[in-house]
Image (tube, rainbow, N blue to C red; front, side, top):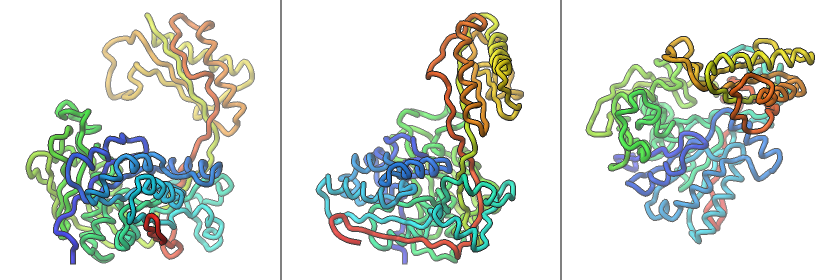
Length: 460
């Protein structure tokens, strides 16, 4: 039996770097049952893995701990539960930091749960030996071709481990890598008692999670008709109002900025959708062509009729690997004939490098003229010759010395190039690592998730 007839699940973080005001305002400006926060992207996992290699206690989203510190008393008073993938590659470390915050506030009885098992970086050789080739989903190349350069490997776990942590009484659930919609689906499974074979219901929860996973991107942010969006400075972050039968509404707190209508929701639905008839997740598939969107009041969209199907026998694995080096720099060129002067500057750089015996293949170099229609080249037309252009240049390759050599020829243009070259900032461009993304599949029976719940001041 469902624990509640209706559950309010809000998402206050679309990525690591989103405004900390999003989750804080969701807690303070109206009722919610759950606060979810999405911090992770593919490259984020590699960054966190490197942080942990330098410092064993690192490897999680520190912004999450700061946010909990600011609103913990209100979370406890309002009985709002939190689900976040802030654990990164170190859920244990994140849990310890959160327990420290709870102790700082002198609160007792708060339960913190973690979901582990997604980080398979240390199991890669074992998986490969067992026959899992972890072939690149785009190129079909086996992982063995880049194995020595792999920096992180994380499985996209499903929502049921989150529900398990909530079933064990967790007030705060911290996960590593999982699906973004799973942050919302987990609480719905817990509250409504949905089973692994309730494919339509799981699909509905997945669609709900997909709509709100990018935070304000479904409430007027990054919206084509941006002039229609009121008070964007105080944009309201999204709330899923869900029922046990799979019907749900997308809404936000009253008296907040932003806009929720069928169009804003549709815009977000198309984000990273893939096959609209088979949106794949570890808990099932969702048919994005099956359901209906209906305006059901101001800033309130009703979603009904979601259909789903069985999951695949595999998990997706997000693998990162070292893929060479890059260096980028920029100059501002102003005055008459700014674009022509910027093009000359670019040619000067390549020619001077060649004079010193350093050349780059076309695919190893990049030139952009910001201000001259570079973002929409071939689509929109420039109405007038720009009076200022930002010249952005870069190179990439496997030879760090060659990449660094490029950076030595950009600054001299200030005095040895055409007139109007100014605006150099940030120092000489230096080579930085390129992190490659390697998507793969692994059979589910090879992966085991683990749920641990600890009571602040007590034991697991």
